[in-house]
Amino acid sequence: LFSSSNKANAESILIYEELILAAARMEPIREKISRSTARFVDLIAKELSRQYPDSEGYVEVAWGIASIFFNDISLLALRLPRRIVGSSRAAAERLIRSLEL
Image (cartoon, rainbow, N blue to C red; front, side):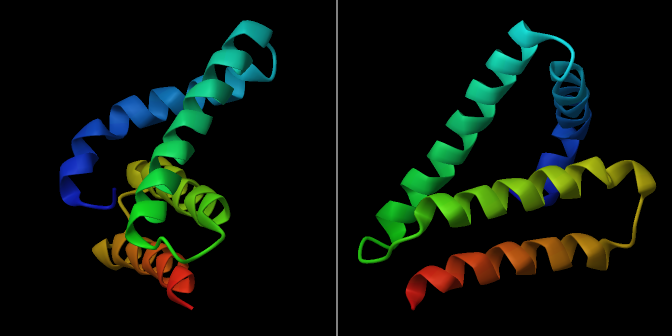
């Protein structure tokens, strides 16, 4: 998720975030965006459950990773230093390592 190849999709993610803001005013958009976001988190959680079958807390970690990802993408327009992206990835990796405990 946090690779430079995903930066090409940044514009799409920013549009998605605009839809999230519009969802507060428009019920049909809210429902679709809610389902789409839940599917994204479910995909992350399923992959985590495969990688760490003896752990619990997949959904919480998946939500944390998705939140970091969306925040990271939303800040791209600021052109922050590359170390910020590295910090986001490190934070996601820490969440994942919590499943190893």
